[in-house]
Image (cartoon, rainbow, N blue to C red; front, top):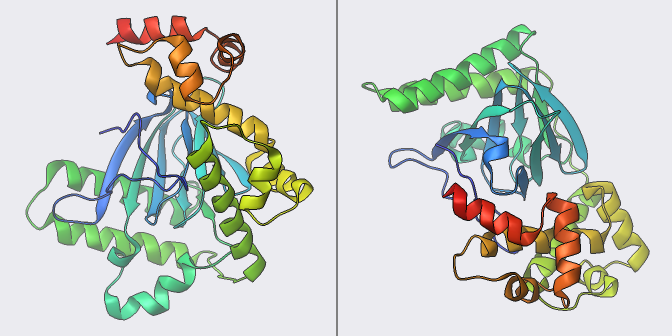
Length: 296
């Protein structure tokens, strides 16, 4: 199963319920370019995530860091971390990801000692899983085994999944998890989410740099440094990109027209919307709408 247009709230928290009927775990096989945006946009969730690259290469951004993950390797993304993904060099990247509630990793008695300290650590936004190392190979094999169990659902598969998860977690904490807690890092993450939350609530309105900075309790210059450091863009360019993202969904509605969409996502000029859309998507809004209508 693939989610091609997952929903997020104003703070970019994903709204998808990552679970089956039986278990607080979900498994997806994702072809990056099939997402409505052509990439996996910035989001976060309470669940921890395990990734295995089936084909191609992907560039993941987790908080401030970018990492290339190649075919047969994996990645652990920690709870609450902002992350996004794009394929590298048109490699037709496909990956499997498991989203797991931290409470399902170990029993309640072991959670406080062996899970909570690690998901609350400020120095562990992600762990690269190198399949050329024995422990990494064991982790990616367990991810594939969990996918197989979820697909086939043999008798007692829930117990088998739990056992595989415990093995993954033990390998991770045994091979380099050294949790640290820095209050300034927690504050930085909170402020970034506050600014994004404000943008996503007000993107259809006129937005000034001062408004965004105020939402994070920062000066204008510090606000710009946050966006440059974490998102590799400026605050107002992020607003522009977000408006374009929101327009993609509206343009796919049969009754919509380009001018209405432009104004509804915060542009005060149709021609300016068309110019920015073409620069971002390499086609005009009308061409995109026609393409998506024919695609359906």
